[in-house]
Length: 316
Length: 56
Image (cartoon, rainbow over all chains, first blue to last red; front, side, top):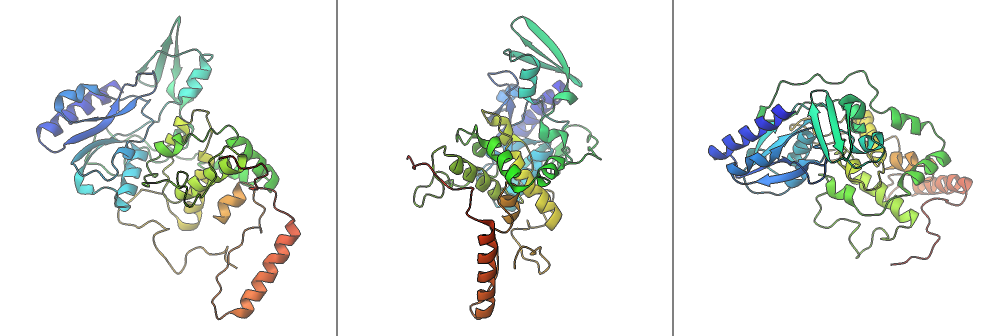
């Protein structure tokens, strides 16, 4: 991973020198361990800030929306799919972008690591190949990365970027054979009361901080429905009904667009697995419309187009 | 929409969709009666109802 970081810095310097980009979007080390933060740099001499390891779980596509400059950006598989979605939705033009593709082997679930070290504070993290070491006051422990992947990365089937101007390394093998939607399927087996209890429990700790919405590259509306007061679509209290309404409406807005990048879950301060909402819609999009978001620029998304043979069994 | 609402525990049948032209009076009657019957069979809604007073 350290090689990746050095290569990203080199490419960024070159892009600035050649005048190909005016701004470069990447990650820098965060002020807290295992939390790399997005950074926008405007000069080649800031390139040293750029960093890469398996703690780059935020989605950089968020910072592209409606920009007018020439932009360089690093993109993993899921991030690149969000860039495609952004282009399809006219939020950015392909010609503005210089995409540095990163074949990705997944991001580390920082919560799982914190649990593994007994909730002690992690002050530093370092990666060595397939392993990583976390250090804190009076302890240092090494783990295998594959045991601590974010849940969306475990079931990821698009690790390599789908759109890029150059790749930083050789493509990595895609994961195959796993059941992507096994968790959704197990919920589908439940009866309605059990389903309701499951989801009510899932969102019960929600603070309505909207971090999931803010971290999501799909959420770029100038005014979000939750912030509007005329009309007020959803109550602003943490009444269970309001909270549930927020979560399923947020998910609906991501229908046919979500790339399962996992940024929403990663940023949730109370660890809600809100991917259970969006994943159901991803499953339906695949099942009924043979659609996975952000794979190609030539095809319009299913909610954009009408086809006479569209799925319509639910209409009586 | 129906898919996700039923996935999170809405009873199947409580949410129904139909397309009825303004010229299809008979279809409208049929659908309205059928929906009313099915929803009545499900009983009063239990979910997504605010019981507490709304505090702004």
